[in-house]
Length: 68
Image 1 (tube, helix red, strand yellow):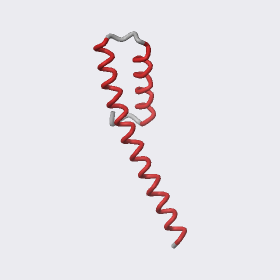
Image 2 (cartoon, rainbow, N blue to C red; image 1 turned 60 degrees about the horizontal axis):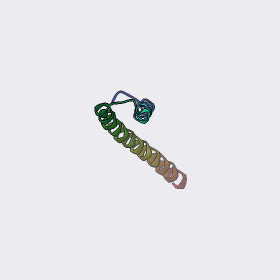
Image 3 (cartoon, rainbow, N blue to C red; image 1 turned 180 degrees about the vertical axis):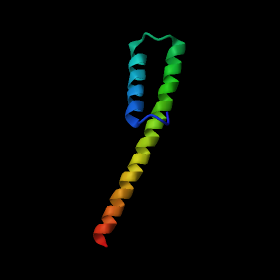
C-alpha cells in the first residue's frame, strides 16, 4: 500500500465495494474482500489526516506571515 497514491487506494476500495455488492462472491471471498477493504479504508483515512495536517500547517504559516 505504501507505494500507491491515494487515488489508487480509493479506486481499489471502490472496486472491492462493487465486488461485494455484486453478490457473486463466496462467503470466504466476501470476508477476505471486506478485510482488505477495511485495511484500505484505514490507510485512506490516515493519508487524508496527513494531508489535512499539511493544509492546516500551511494556512497557519500563511496567516502568521500576513500579520508579522
